[in-house]
Length: 585
Image 1 (cartoon, rainbow, N blue to C red):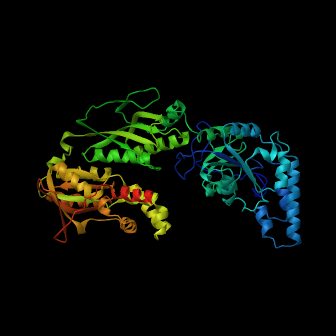
Image 2: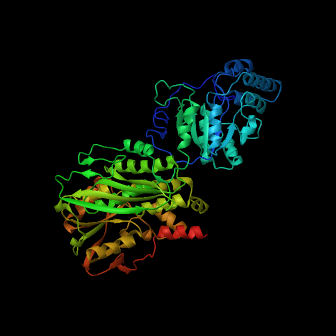
């Protein structure tokens, strides 16, 4: 465990309910109530020492605490450091060093430790040690290894180095820097809560070693509640499976073992799916009994970031919903660049499947491949939906006088995107962390499927159109082209998120031209407009009447409190323009 890593002489007995384990699948990780994959790439492994690289129990913590007078529930190192300078503190430090040297003299390499270190080195990974022990004791213990002692590691940080001890992240950050890697590219392995806390605080991937505790149950338990580790292993031999998740995949199809693991996690239960997605199954078969109309839509998603998978589902489901249809089935082609790791691939696939399940969509097939054709992940998705013929919405049916209703405020997607991509710039402009979090959280509001389903219940709703790239300004122009009628819009009625207003003011952007997935335009007969808005409000979906459908062949007529006003036109989306300027700067 390393000196002061324990409050007693062994790991705590508290268990963590849902936590990562390599038993069976080497994959699950802890994220509160839900277990979700974590995408990572590894270039280094940083080990705790006592109880991790050495066998546990060599150092008698209980005896040490009794000798120096440290309470059983306190950490020894912190307790000693809190003593006032003087004889008592010096005596305690002397006892600490003596106990460490005794423990080092009888220590031995943990089972499988030396073979593991050789395998990791052969993979080209950097190796390091971060311990709360003193350097003299570590060097003495390493003499009992067959490896090259301290020279077998790229970095070795002990209590004698000028760095705050675990659970501070400083040691992890310094070790990563010394190994020439980023902290998030580092795997921190330890047998105690302090190791996990330090690793997570630094942004590293964390693995809790139980040394066999809990392995009989095979449930992956054993990580302390306050450790929140990414993975649990019961022995060092199991660490290979975790490391493999962080190393680049070979070119070609996703390996069957990874694909099979992902497919097993997909939600099932749709009786219409006769041939579900499976390894070796090239097609999906759907039973269309009782279906009048099949609606289809496909969109490639190329944006960077961690939300690529959810975007692929939501964008395509939104378009199906605007036809009045019910999104049901999804096929995806996922292309991954050649430096992709298994964990990154599985995290993306999981993002797709979890979002699909939340939208009641079944993933029925597709293809996943690692290729040098792409420099970043690309998801090309095809969504299939069903609708009764009588419920199919055709924008050409919009008529003069129909009311135009807008759901939600503008512009959730653009606001969240700019906050995620330009956080540092926005902080420099005075936006605080809480405001940025509020902006980023708007990504949870990108689906228009709920409001489209509600609107489609009304016979008077003639057309539905989602607001996407180019914002409301572009969406209204798209709508007039599709319905062949002009639209009058009242500028003062257009709702804008306060977060959007704030970001646009700071970045010099126009909310009307900002990508706004999450908002839906509804063209409705005047007699039913109030009822539609009321039902949406009752479902906690904001809905505001912003205009009317005009005469055939007309364009967008903008009014500001009854007076003519200009309606903006954007050559590119405002988010793309601002991000492009930022890259140039």
